[in-house]
Image (cartoon, rainbow, N blue to C red; front, side, top):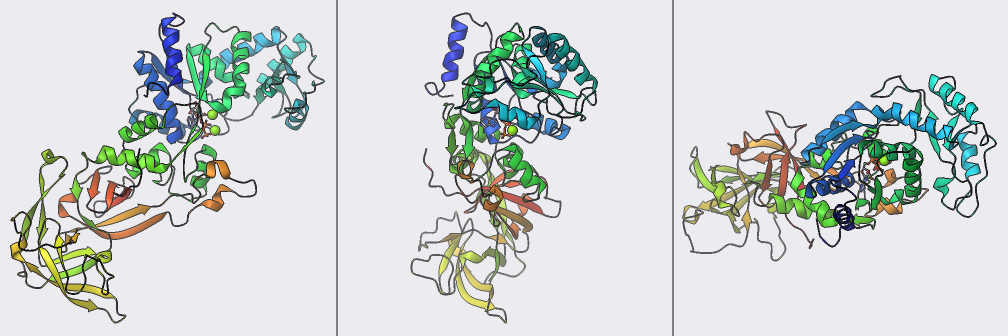
Length: 551
Ligand code: ATP
Ligand code: MG
Ligand code: MG
């Protein structure tokens, strides 16, 4: 992580030097109510990265205090994603395992006269809370006796009341300029089955009460969160102090990470999944970790991206091209090169002997020669790209057109002699001749051609499906702009997925799910783990080769 931009590191260094802590403990605390996204990756990189750097510990803690939205599927996916990103947690915890302890601390608050049971409903509580400019009003139930509060709280736990009938509130200050301190609700009734504790509880702690306790129970030293929680810091500190916790974790805020042309909140991502705008939480168009993985992103690229985006306090919307830059960088030396034709046009090489095949040598990665060579077949019939032919080309068109000669990558020069059309006038085949003198690697210098095309042999190639992606959201800065009258769904790009049926080199036969390749001229692709079959590989385009992005 960059030295000067990381103010959190400075705080940690000071705390270790001053002896405030001997060892730091951080935590990554997702709520299991959805899959992780690239924003979470920032939190993961910061929390695990800092602990690694200072020889501390990091807990993976599921912040599972809301039974209505949480699910085991999310727990499993979060564990998988954190591991895949390359991090190992020191402890795996569930906040719901602390419910008994949290209940005891709430009772302690009641006994100290620092919490009370309120019968106002949610709307009334909101109304009584006041605004930034107007002080709040005290609830008529605020003066209940300690005995009555203890009795009611116990009966809430026993299930004597319905959802919303009563809440437990901290008794702080209804006139505080900080609205968060105007007697926040700290327990509510929810008769619901919890993914971990089942039906054991029907009252649940609110985030603002639960989170500081969770941190303190685990001995977290630095509780890193995003800046929306800045105004809640005084409440965080109040809870830790008034609940008489032994450890006193320090809350430190950093800026959220956002990407252009997407949405990031789990609520919105879930809606896209539930309403089938996309093919599951791991759809390659989503900014989820599982979506990026399925698209073909590597953990290295994601980590490098997050670190380059920095740990500043500011809210940043980062151009998705920056993310793409890092995956190109990572795959450049790793990904084997290959050729695939996405929109095939048959070419018959009329002077090539019928029935003959030759196996040509092609380097697997010219930027990493150690990867060796592959063999590719060449025979009388091949496929080229439809887009590499024009019957009436403009000036400076160097690909195939009648009478023009081009180079076939790793093979020979061919010249377009004749066009075959169907009854509608569509070009369905080209007849070409090749020049045996021009074989690649033969040292031929007799004449030059300007265009080099990729191709595959028609008789030996394998069928393949190619999936090309465009941004899912048409507006670059939707995360900030979304107006009240418009839903983000109005900005969904209907053309975000294009599926093409083409052909690949036969040596790709054994390519496995998640293997990554650079297809000559088309970019980097990943073998899709969901849709590939033994008959047909499906490739997701990770990123094209061109980029205007500069760091
Ligand atoms: P969302 O609003 O997207 O649903 P969340 O904050 O509710 O996210 P949590 O499961 O509570 O999701 O997040 C776990 C941790 O990840 C928290 O500490 C949170 O601050 C952090 N986090 C979530 N989104 C981002 C983001 N975009 N950038 C940086 N950190 C994030
Ligand atoms: Mg949250
Ligand atoms: Mg959320």
